[in-house]
Length: 248
View 1 (cartoon, helix red, strand yellow):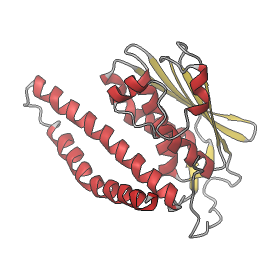
View 2 (cartoon, rainbow, N blue to C red):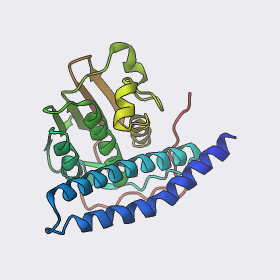
View 3 (tube, rainbow, N blue to C red):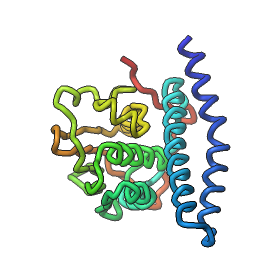
């Protein structure tokens, strides 16, 4: 029964991807029309924001289904983690501005890791999205990339509500939401952090959290630095390499 449900989730998510992409492109095209009334532009902006949020949910559902099926292959290449962090933060800034939040990136360039660029970006998006959900207007969100000995360190910190001590051991569990009321209000499904952890495991990386109630949260991802020089080809990965996540 689980396999059938998992396959349905994967198929449904896959089918939703194309119409959502088309809808996003159409909405983005409409925003280029400078003759529209301001209130119409605001409505289109809200629709675009909700479409982007739905796209992230669909992508998370598809990822979790692939992880369960052992089909989430990691195409590892040299990735400049600082450059990717800056790009991802820039793409998420509009969502922060909609909530009157400050979102900044302090990324050291030239921090190379061996990883799947799209999956590492998904980790960043999920961590930033989590911060957006739980940080009230006027707050701050920061992403940082630095080097500590032989590890690349990615951090996402916010000035949000923080997480109670009793909830900390569960934050990376599927469908777990420390603040259920706020998660429902913001559309959280409780998958983003679980997927981030699964992707980190597939990259031999560690993800941790430091948080206390009322003091905001800080997520720390530690990845191995690339041993090869930029531009040097990586050792080919086996075609069947796949990541899976342990289920409780």
